[in-house]
Every structure is written in C-alpha cells, then in structure tokens.
Image (cartoon, rainbow, N blue to C red):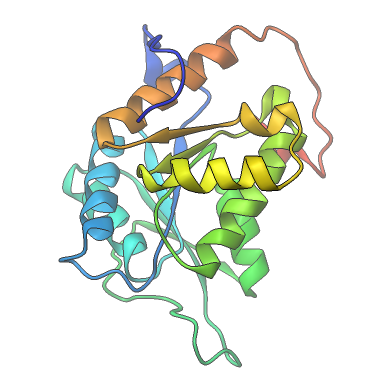
Length: 218
C-alpha cells in the first residue's frame, strides 16, 4: 500500500524535476522466475518510460533485472561496479547486466556510497544483509538531510511489517518517518516519485550545499 498524498506532479517533468536518476537496490541472487526479479524488471521499465535513468550495482539478480527493464524501454542505465580481489562471496560484476555506462569503485563501501550519490531517489526491493545495509545508510542520510533529502521508495507490502517493528522497537525521530513511502506496484513507484517532486517544489529556499555533503542532498 502506498502511504502518502495522492498529489501528482504536472508540467514538463523531465525538464524541471529534481529526481533524474533512480538507484535500484535489492537481492543479488534473485533469478528470472522469482517475483522480486520480475518486480525489479517492471520497475526499471516504467522508470525509463517516464524519463528516469536507472542505476544499480552492475551485478546479477534485481540489479540485472532493473537494467534489463530500463533497456527494454530504451532508457539510460548506469552500473556502479566493484571487482573484488579478496571477497569470495560477493557477486561482483555481472557480464549479463548490459548497462550503458559503468562507474568503477575500489571497494564495497565506496560502491554503496556511489550508488547513493548517483541516484536522487532509491527504490529498495526485498534482499539480504547487503540490501539491509544499503537501506540503513540511505534512510539515515535521508533523515539527516530531511528538508532536502533523497527519498526512499520501499517496494513490497512486507516493508510495512518491517517498518512497524523498527518504529516500535527502536528510537526514532519524526524526520525518520517522513522520507520514505511503501509501494506495491511499478505505477505506485512513479506516483511516489511525483509526490516527492511536489514536496520539493514547495521548498523555495535557496541553499548553497557544502561540497563535501552535496552528493547526498537534493
């Protein structure tokens, strides 16, 4: 279920919107017959159809699916990759992930930070510990820069239970609850992006971002 206003963002969105690239994060071991793979494909496709570039970690699973979906709609795709030398259980680069542009990083943390830097919004699918770590970092950055943050879109109804547990069992600030939406369909992803654009358009404050922090603000 999509939480939040049903306002839409009208006008020449592609030219004026702040969110231009969406980073897709999720399960690297997902296979084409898995629902999460199919979801990532359809989300990548609808993002491209609506003029967004799609970024992911350049690996298999939901990353490959998001790229393939975007490419099927002739969208622009970015792979943020890491070629490990010492890690034996990391998926690394998937040669079947046919993105348009590659950004190479030196280690796992740099890859995560670059994914958060490249995207102006994040769609987070079901995944494992790696996805949890990406989600946690994205959520905290969004909360820290809450008035001009990069929003999170949590894909799947299961997120509602996770967020209820986190909110009830952990210590949350009000800002933590304003920077994400839970959605259940590709169409709701686009609707959530439009909603966030509406919220951003209402902020007319002119800011000069610090160069060391600018990458994680919008």
